[in-house]
Length: 497
View 1: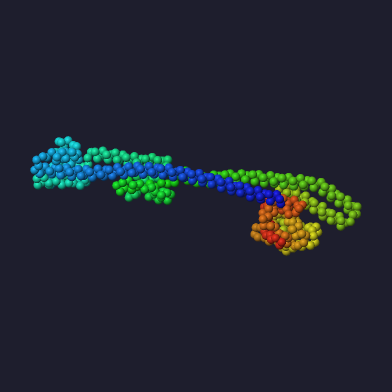
View 2 (view 1 turned 30 degrees about the vertical axis):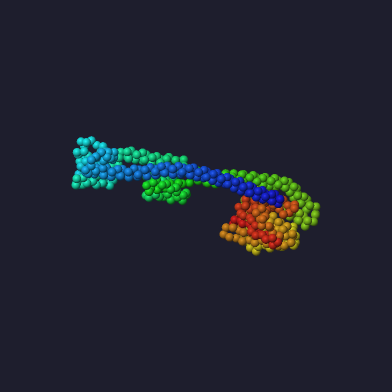
């Protein structure tokens, strides 16, 4: 009993230790994951600040270009006013001429019939100006680029269409290069978390560091936006000119892996421990079976020699005229020793099961025990006589004997033992009930373990042997069906028909 109390204490201690180790491992993994998440958030924050600063540069550049475009429109209007001054009667046209010549915006003058009349600062050959096709392409393009201006000279109405200056377009290329560099900086940060940069108005993809083709991303940016928005708050980028962009970013893949890593690792370790436990349990059980079989064979062998001598002495006593009743009682015990020897012999070898009458076997063993236990113990035997099961009768008698003797000890030599037998289509159920002191609930799982006993001088092998006989040799089941303190216990045996 002390052995199993210590075993239970060790199990509790090991379970607590395993819980502490697992909890500590999960806590440390969670701590590492949190630290990684914190560092990623710091890097993302720094990166976002850099992007915002670059966006400010782009915004200011766009604003500058808007101002430059407005300034060139104003210069075009000044050119028209300066040209108109030539119609006035002035003593000096130097100022008007200087103003007009200082403006380098390409202009084309059309007459009231929209025909080419003249041009200024136009970068084409003078001979080519005489061909309508050479000028027409400029007229068509510039009319949609800027709103035309109107000029009246000497009663004739003219339409002035103009383009932006070469300086404006040179700066435009630099601005576009800056914006492209900005987008490339976004895309080049593959070491950061996955993100997409989209236009807020059209949801068109502007940039991404996801290793997928633009076509694949463009086909489903909204899906990506929803996924990333659920993971993190998007970053708003003001690009100027009323253009707003949003950066949607995902959770760091390394962080996600760290979240699942401890569970995967613990699962693998647990699987390894489980496989090892099953293997060692199988080998341990096989070793125990070999020990049981070896001890049983040796016991049967040791009993064989003195048993033969006892049988010879029995015959001698008969010849010497000893009281016949005494000899008969001695003969019963010798036969009992033969049965015990046979039991040990069968445990040590392969057991053959035959069909036997369960009630007759129970009646036989109780009849033997009736004269060897207290007369205050009453046996209530089953009434059925035709229930059979596959069994080895000597071994099954041993099981019934062990359970019955334990019941007698539990009742203190006074009470009733009831046997009930019932059958189904495939099984036979045998219930053995006593009116003893019962088994505590906490000990129900250990009653069949080797060494379990409530007696001061008991070995604790009877029920363990009974379980081995029923389950290993008869391929049945034995368990405590019911037990109440101070009311009794019922053992149930299930055998195959």
